[in-house]
Image 1 (tube, rainbow, N blue to C red):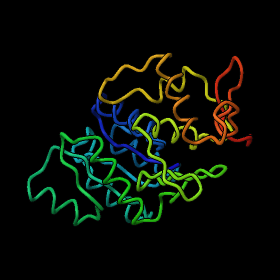
Image 2: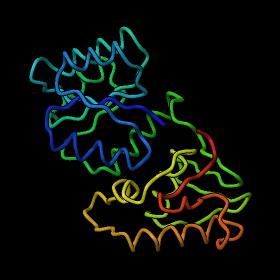
Image 3: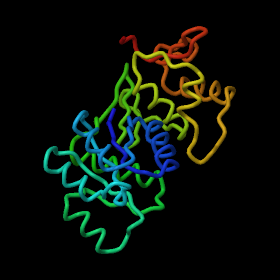
Length: 225
């Protein structure tokens, strides 16, 4: 699971974007300013930095320089400063990409995946049993056959594959698959989508071996602890 540091002082953006990226299988930590970002980068390893230019105690350019001097970590600037000077300066200090606000989450996700792929920091496939999921292409296969999943089915499978060996409660699944557009997903809807997903990935949906029900607790893929 890619680990991302989001450096942004707007609480609404950090909350919404962190939740969105988590649903897409990316672990996200946040920092509100330059000092906190640099401290976290000293203590932890990240696969990518999402970085605002205007920060309360400095600017993103300084953070980007520090990242590039010490670690080979890709950086994407997220900023409302879309003028040519800001863009050129961002690339001059080592940015790998530049996304202007307001941005569409799906477009940003595509940019993130492209940068991670270029830096070989995105796992090419997630596999269990005879099911393979390619998070870069968004393709799911069973053996040699491609499966066609709805957006919610795909997100549900991605959550399970990113949490192999972990029991996931229904409440956690509902929280994870909450759609960024605000679409309401209730308990009955979750039951329907798990049933549909099993019909597509299981050899025998009535006796599931991939997505197993842990009675009274939730669901689990894999036996790893």
